Amino acid sequence: MGFLIFCFLMLSGICSHPRFAGDQVENYETATRIQENIKLFQTQMEELQREFDEKSKDVLIEEPASPPVKEDTEDQDLDWSLWSVFVPAVFIVIEICIQDLDWKLLCKTIDEEDDDDDEVEQACQRSFTQLVSFPDRTVLESFYKMHIRSTMQDITRMCEFVEGFTDILLVGCRSLCQKDYGIFLEDCTGVGSMFEKWGSKREVTFDLLVPLLPPEGYVFKPEEMHPEFPPEKRGYRRIAVHSGCMCNRTEILADVLCLIHGKDKFHLGEKPEDSLETCLCTDAYLDTEKVLKWMRALLLASWEQISHKYDFKVTFPSAALCILKLAYRTGRHIYINIIPAVRCRDTDVCFVTLNFGIHQPRVYWLESFALLEHQFLKGIARSLPEDSCHIKCLQILTYLNERHSPSKASVLTSYHIKTALMHLLLVHSPEKWQSQWITQRLRDVVRYFSCCLDEKRLYHFMTGNRSLMTKFDIPSDFQDTEPVNLFRAFVLDHAAYRNALAEFQEMVMSVNALVPECAV
Image (cartoon, rainbow, N blue to C red; front, side, top):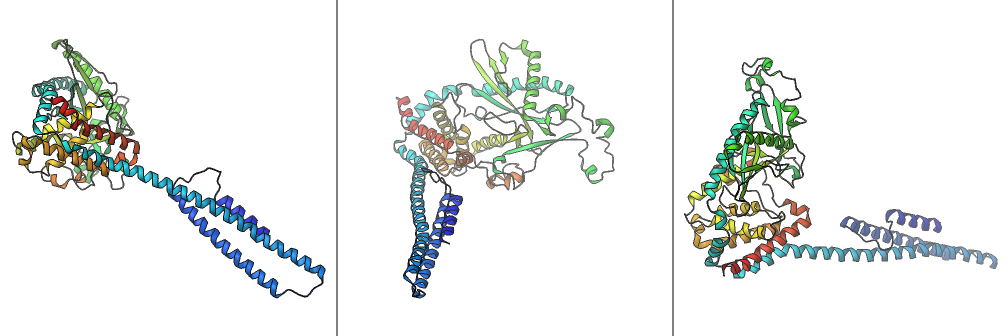
């Protein structure tokens, strides 16, 4: 009986907890299982002890007067019974000791990980405490004149030229579109840092949105946002391409023939090889890669028609984006980034083609509020003092953030800093943004950014911001949704968070060290 108990305990221990020497517990779930096994072994030990006590009592009570020869046999049986209980007990004690040692190692490992996380989370606060000697207004103004204002000279005139030149290119593109798929290209609209007058890069890039309108008989319908959308898909939509009549009357009365969109006119159901669905779509959804390739071909053909009128050369340095490089004979060059977009229900919310570094299928388009953000900055500038410092704050922080890593993409982007600034523009009263308060406002932006990094939470300025409902025409599904966390990647990727923290610390140290040096 004891031998069977011993075999059962050994087998259950091996099956429930296989382990090699030197293995370490890796997670909380394993630790919980260890505690459960300890309790189980303790319970079994108590049951065995009670069984042993009961058998001992029975042996003492029922011991008969027998010949000396039989006493030896009974003593052997009793000794075997004692050994059958003692050996499993020894193994159980050894197992408990091993598990207790593993539990201590686990606790030590968890404590070390918690200490690392606390160190990372407190680093932002430690970085902010380095701003005790924040530069005063005189130093900041001197730094701005020396390093930033020179890059922004004649920026208004350059923006006007870029928009005019792009419109001329689009005129030629529209004539070619009619021969292809009938897609209509709207006028371009400048967005981003250069058109908002806060860009500070030496290599000037102008971003322009070009909304696409579907040909007659087609509809571009963005995918509806649902609450069950996974977090990694938030901010992205697929755009379905529907052909045929989409009039309300035919949707209500299916048997009524629409006189505008007749079936004999559009040949519904037929998809020739050069149709819109075949050439620009994948599985009935607009394909961003195909759209960009088509747009580049249009721009190149349009430039060939007008190239003799200009004294600069136009090339496409990127094989994946519609970026035009204008190279002058003097060696000067500028970049124009033309971004195809699809409007969301005739509003200024657009869906744009994806950029490098965004790992999503080609049929997903990125939500863009660039037009609304441009309108917000223009509108709030009218309510601020003429010498407002909000643009200077954005330029200084962006310059310092991009200065330490000019050759590689930063984890913290200028858009993150811009978002933080726009949130603060709704917090402080207009008079608090006068140029005399530039030191205080810079400190506020850095403090707010530090808190966002500490919490790994920076909300998108437009989505879910109910204070903007009466100011902008934002679709209801963007107003009622939860705000998109721009720092969500830092929650999932600890290495990216450490890189972002390092970049923030370098930016903070630059405020203390680089600015005074440049001002001397």
